[in-house]
Image 1 (cartoon, rainbow, N blue to C red):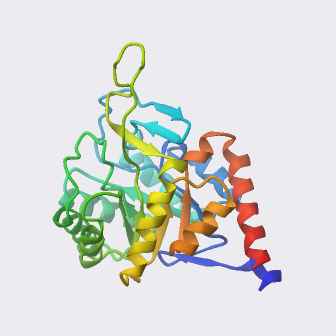
Image 2 (image 1 turned 90 degrees about the horizontal axis):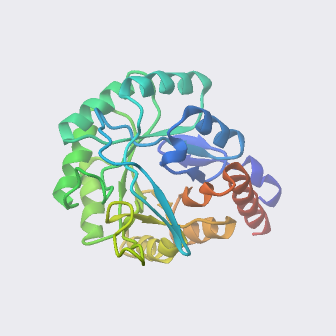
Length: 287
């Protein structure tokens, strides 16, 4: 096995990928040229920015770095559904390992969006329904999660993961996703955070926004570990705070099947990705 690590493949949502490191959904995956380059530079797969029908940008999207990670008020893709359908059909022709992140205002609309996407690609989906700082988000509940997952399951045969955030009744929400038809869980979306200007006293980034980065990694690791201890067997895409290859290894020790990296890529994008992929490969070879 030590000599075959670079030929090892991993399964994510029915898709065979060359390594377990997946670029997560975000600003950096809102352009097809970046997605292609992430794959060239070693990503096992890439999750697109979340496609949302008729998405209206009500604020200027920004990020703000702190010592333990990054806060952001970004939500959905700036591109239209029609634009993405064209790009996704190109990705299919090129056989690129892409996961399509989607959301919509209602379960029915999400089911319809999934159906449109399935007409141009057989790429798996990630339901980005738990962005805690989105303008349309009120509260995540098992019922809400179930309704969104079920709506997609009823419209397409495509494999999909439901992306959830840490928080109240996580186990109940995970079970609801499974009952709704999810093939895997992505954990975790960003968690709620806020940062203030020490001089003016005003909240930056329009108030409560998404917090990601190394500060949330121990929390997500514990959540995944506890889900496995409770007997959860569904595949998990771990996400949160990956900075190096050892972080990837820790996620897999906790029970994740594959691991997403995103926030770290905001510095030295492709170089950082290559380093993480290489470090994880070296750890795998040493086992």
